[in-house]
Image (cartoon, rainbow, N blue to C red; front, side, top):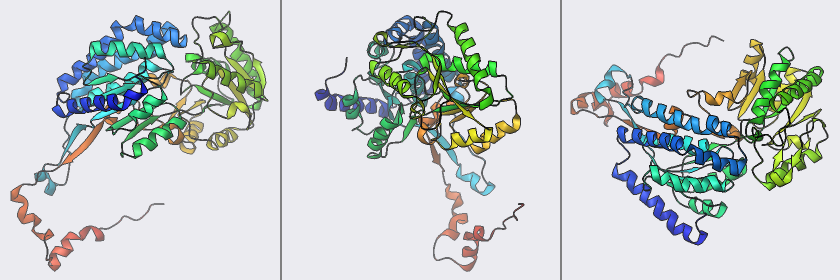
Length: 477
């Protein structure tokens, strides 16, 4: 249930101030305390998993196995592993410096940023709410969690279960819609972590700028797939379709469109048909293994895009507006300017764009905003290197889709329109951590510091400006 908007300014300020007071008290600083909170998060995900699955089934029609694999299990694993690795992450660092600076004791402290605001989306609401929180907890921050109003059952569940495992003066759930979020953004936070779309991100960035609040923006965009004609087309189709079917295509790293050489397009279509029939022998419309579209508005948006395409629908996905169901739909011969290339699809529609060469495919990708991920299917190492060198994206993934998200050691981030700032495990910890530099100048250093004080002798000037005249190696180009 959303908090009445009229009470939000007072209540939001009260919540923010309570969390800030907790932070300033030093409660969140001890490593052992942070580890306990991370284990509490793992326990919450494990113990409440049936309620979580039921809520996401009601809100999104999401299959239970998918929830346990991609949301609940990830939070348990990453919470536990973060707790185990935290002592190493949080170690004070003593950088290697020049001998004459060593007596100054140059030090890098790992300091928590403070009180954070985490605004999460509806599509993967469990992991995209709590993955940022893992980093905030590990860093020693306090945080407000603002889940999406588009998954009301899940968001209400969080409001009920989070206080069972966490002190509400340290971590607090605040529910509501746009007005409530707007009121929260009027206040100063020490870090804002937002996952969602570029339109809302601009609003949040503008609000944050008023307070010079640092931001992490995990957005999305149209993540392309490039297929080398020499690659196994059947295997590429299987892996692409699997990635597209996760959460009915409603994920920021879903394959958005496929670029394939023209003479391989029909072979790819046939492979998609084959694997669709294998995944869903009776179709996906009533399959418990395939999710629903989040809202009537999004269902209408997707069917409208399909109604306007000039491409040829070659795998006709059935639709059921009353239940917000839409089967995977494949469209071939899609060209630049088509309705299916206007915006991030965020649904189970996959356009195929035929090209005449791999260079044309690269040019097509580079003519658009930088995606969150670029997928490519090829065994050609020179082509892979070309894509790394000549394109920009948050990630570049070869010969699979979606699976890079399971690698705990890789940062997950966008670039340009797909966002900025890193997350996952230590990368999330680093996001909520300030590297605080320090030196401790000994009294005994005074004789060596004498040359910095005016008036400067000719010898002092020579010593102070020596770097200006240092030799520069010749270019080897």
